[in-house]
Length: 75
Image 1 (cartoon, rainbow, N blue to C red):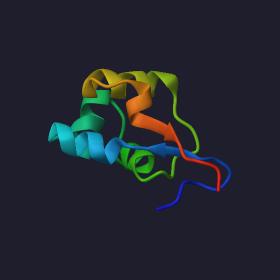
Image 2: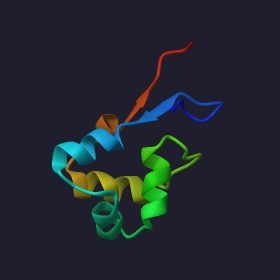
Image 3: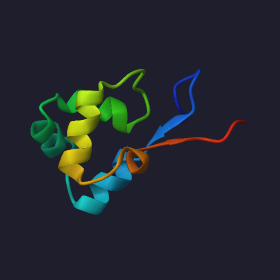
């Protein structure tokens, strides 16, 4: 699915979760957000993310922000 119109940020949460053998539900519980919010981020439908949520996701997954998010090339 292409990123939301107006930005080129791509989330790699799906790949990281698969590599860690973790589910959306388990991550959501560990981070303290709803599974729906994690799914929105994972499916590139998020319009914003709180730094506190981003920090918690990176802490739980043991990753850096740059591993989680990247900037897609301009069309």
